[in-house]
Image (cartoon, rainbow, N blue to C red; front, side):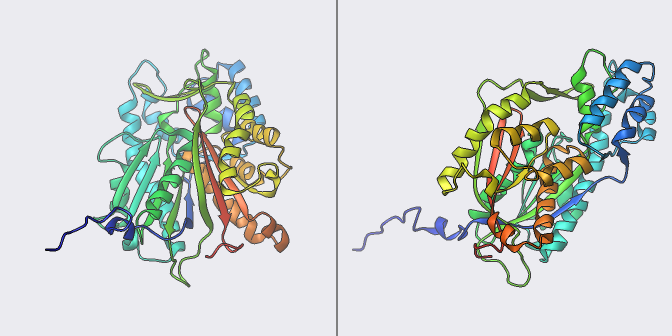
Length: 402
């Protein structure tokens, strides 16, 4: 009489469903609203549309903030006409959350679809081959959510596995890509569409003389969407072209920083809380976070200038803190600074723009030796917590099988 030995997890059906090899970013797409506002004109525009020109001292303060922001222009979904049509957006005594969420629920899937369509076109495979969808946003709060509406707009297969992430602040893009890496590597043949999208009319409000942080938020945040296709294992030769291999990830939370950065919903929209101590905290802690991520994969933390850097540009002061704490050479954060200048801070979506700018810079470089020298890189983003998201990247075409 034969006996049946139960199969173990490692030798059973579970292991056969896992991909062989690390995940890679196979395509990137970005998109912005058509409404562009120049930073040197923003203070005049903002105080006019909020009917606050009588606050001359605060307008002058905003102009100084704009001048020092490192931002040249931003893209905004909300227009002067939209604000005039919804006076509750300016009156803090009136509930406006329903109005704001109504605007974003319509706008977010459309903007997300524009970025996703670009990524899918670059990827080169049919949309029906997408197996998983991850959507991250700080701009929506509903169920069914923006993930289902986006899936419908794109014509994704009904069996696509959807995940909706919300209110992870500036680290949302890095977090979503970390999750995409795990999904791709643990599901053979998976192709994950990751989309981060922000339409920040949720945060727009008139100036309040008791809240300087609101004035700062009005000067740095913009609207946009970023998308990527992530997959692991063999790629289809001649169709799929890896851009960055996603080697290792980590998340660390700085103790005692729960109230340094906050994003909370209220009846008057989303309230952003950003302490002025944030750049100092970053400067004091970022190197150890990087050491903890680089060392396990054999990268020396004493040669950080030998890496390329895809840092989320939370603001000019944050980028300056990275440079100071890590001893980075001028130009190492050039991709992040250019994205900040051209688009502002688009929360989680911003890191997709940085990755796109980084790959363009590598492609344009005529110095093959320089490209080879910086084959390894780091993506980093900060979120409420303070949460520090780090991912080690390897540029495709520089030694790792593509």
